[in-house]
Image (cartoon, rainbow, N blue to C red; front, side, top):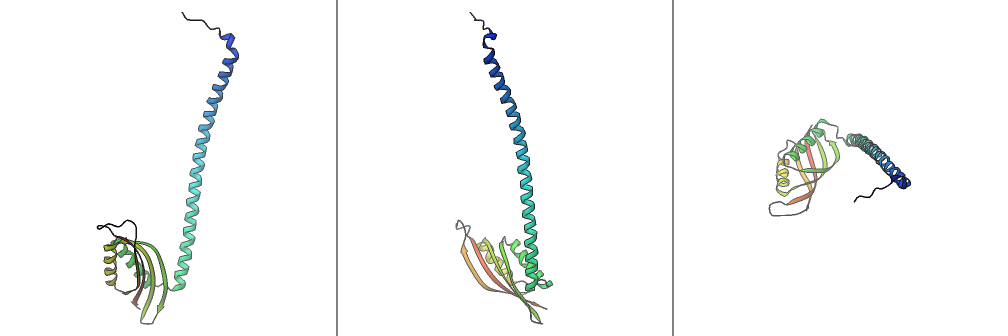
Length: 172
């Protein structure tokens, strides 16, 4: 047989439980609201970081452009040779990690350009890239090559890192 409970006797307990339930309900609401605000703030921070990063990239490009200009890399010919090297790199799956221009010297009859490339590639792609460099309209000379293995090596896939110093001679 069911026993009847007089709720009036447990009035204080019921009030405490109700107060805790209401506090938990509002705590959850506050938590959800703050969680949404935090997500929005994190997104704003990310946008700011990207904006700062973009501004830094723009400053670096400006510095690089000024550096290249001082070295003589503002000639039409120097831009053309870099475009050709970049096209070959794309064609032969070469990853150019850094490009360091040397000086451009005007020898009246021709320009002499020196540049260094730090790159990564599959070994056979690298060989094909070097062969293609020889076919550029500018007489291109590989002055220095340093090759080392990079990453996991298998018979089918030999990845390398390479450092090249090139000289290009372009008729003025």
